[in-house]
Image (cartoon, rainbow, N blue to C red; front, side):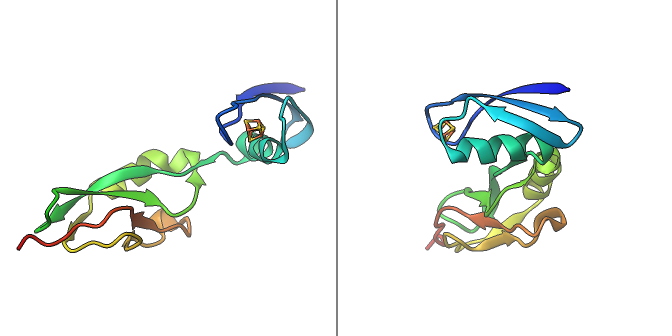
Length: 122
Ligand code: SF4
């Protein structure tokens, strides 16, 4: 039996959670204060995922870069590759919050979207 110690990232309380598992079968989840922690711990030990945040270069804008993020979580083991894909992108101003910057990044089914507005330089 394997034991994994986790810190829940669901809220600032940061509950310490212990998961006992046998292979991919979860035997117990302890230490969480709420159901969010239970869900987080089960996902984290079997299919860890994260939201990725970064910036992309903008041409012709009032700011040189635009902040972006994945619109949902992607597998943790694809984060480095996702960052590379984001680094390779240049966009033209204007950019609006929510604009899709990369569609279906790395085939994850998740889009990378803009999180700020960039106006064109007058
Ligand atoms: S288990 Fe619940 S209360 Fe504890 S850190 Fe996670 S979300 Fe917050």
